[in-house]
Length: 153
Image (cartoon, rainbow, N blue to C red):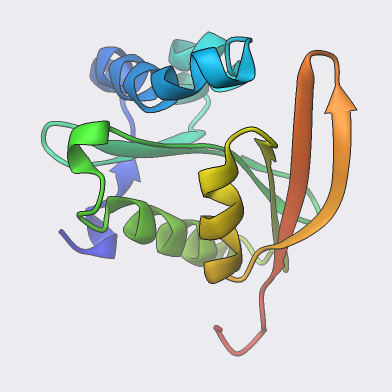
């Protein structure tokens, strides 16, 4: 599977988007004590708005992106547990970089629950830095950013 295997989701992908998101976030339910926000998202509306990009046949991974004037917000990354360790997450993160550059945006932002400590190891490996820790309602979140170099790094 190459980076160009990531494609915009279509309406027929909504059940797979829901299933992959649910499977990816399920292990965290007990740990964080609340349902992660991506699980409660309106997947059909996100797909219809062109915010969801998927990879695999069947779908094994996805990202949800929101473009703002000064950054691309990585709203969710979900990889089905059966696909862990196969490079799906890495390909999706490279796609996010390429998408931000294609949109002319200099920065990618995301947040993750502080109890999802695996992400605290993963994101820095891909150039993300913590900029803030903030409690938003029931969520204790670490906010990250990645500044993109104009030369494509």
